[in-house]
Image (spheres, rainbow, N blue to C red):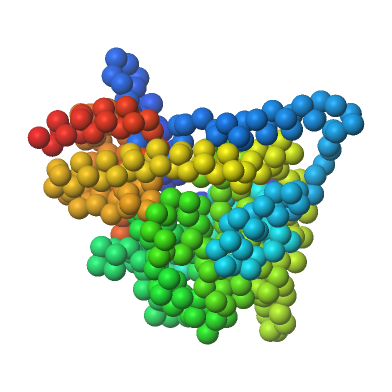
Length: 407
């Protein structure tokens, strides 16, 4: 008899975005004549930047010539890409991150889900509420969650993020070991100030805790007073890991490329108190379970940092942020309380009804898809997330239809 990992049985219902997909499919089958505009799942709609496409083509051509063909690449990623990241994403902003501390991967979601493998089953995990589901679900799978009770897992520490604290959670009242933070936040669109982020770094230092900092949306920050990286905060290299992605920044959702920064100064500890470099553990994990990102994809990602690539990526971000600003403006005019949309491609909207009721209302009456806030946690009930990732034309059309619903 082969026993199942019973932690999987603790996972609640279906994965949020799978449930959304099922409801869309059912609606489409019963209303085949209706147009559906998706402002829910955060998938990009614009094509890859031309500089990335050119680099992709050139690298694919190299792979077709025996003189320039490449087989297995380094699991940590090619040096040419890691060097560019270290300079442009960190050193230019005063964060002394070296290329050897950067690990190229096929997605931020993968890294966020995989890194928890490095920690003991009994570590105390703190997650924001509302929260990107992967933070919670992967720790449930690993056996850290405890039982499900009263719409939450008893073994996790939830950090409430509400309008009362501007969706930036307060420090935990009890000691925790592993902390997930995401800014600009998915789903709320909130950002964190340098002072608040420093408080979290100080907490981690005092409590020997580790922060997993998800900065997948940092490129959408317009306010230059806000930190783009946790490593802009002094001391963070000893207590934090940062995860970033090319998916939303440069449209790589279907191309797959991201990276995780694991500083060499960051230690975790054995039960007896012996320090172990986290960098060494993550390198061992990656070399055992991962064969790296393809050479053409990494060349395409490198092109993001070229002069042409930087301009084209900025244009992409400006395109989506135009949508974000418009969505927030129109919903505010309809009388809804909103956050996000200024330094984030997501707008978090107080729905004035249950989250799934609002989802169903928009789908049935307007043919527009949003994301129910309740799928992100208990504090998300009564809210929805609207994504700016669509064309200007579709956003305008969707907003017109939504306005008719609430007229």
